[in-house]
Image 1 (cartoon, helix red, strand yellow):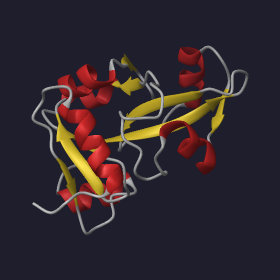
Image 2: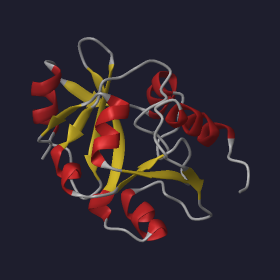
Image 3: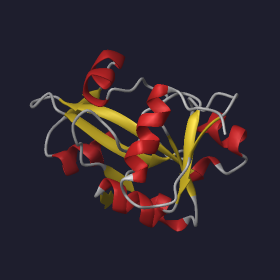
Image 4: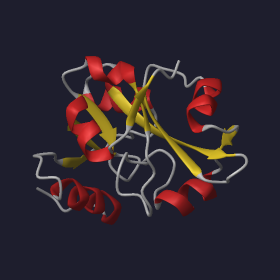
Amino acid sequence: MKNLSKSAQKIQSVLSQFGLELTVIELTESTRTSKDAAEAIGCEIAQIAKSLIFKGKRTQKPILVIASGANRVNENKIQEYAGEEIVKAEAAFVLEHTGFVIGGVPPIGHLTYIKPFIDECLLKYPEIWSAAGTPNAVFKLTPDDLLKITQGQVVLIK
């Protein structure tokens, strides 16, 4: 097995701390978008757990949404859950708060813990795939694994 890039290795190390057999893989193909990831992996777009960062307009805090790749996030619903208006986070904000670039943001391993809102649609699949720190690194997990490693709140996002 070839060595992982620094960001992907960081996620592998974080995953290992949970005692789950989850393995980061780096592909030659891009996994930057849900469509790219699904094509590279060979799964449905809906099985991609995309980690999206928004910014609280009042608090300026990061808000993490882990959505099914097939779903568009209803920002009004996320605002209700977050208790404040949200705005799309710019690339510099995402990097500053997670340590990762857009297109490779994982659900875990951020610079500080961000409790996520998790799309309930992800729970219906026996396996899902998530970004692992770079725009071509991913790992396979179950919905139960996702809940365990993120301590997230399951919500309706569309």
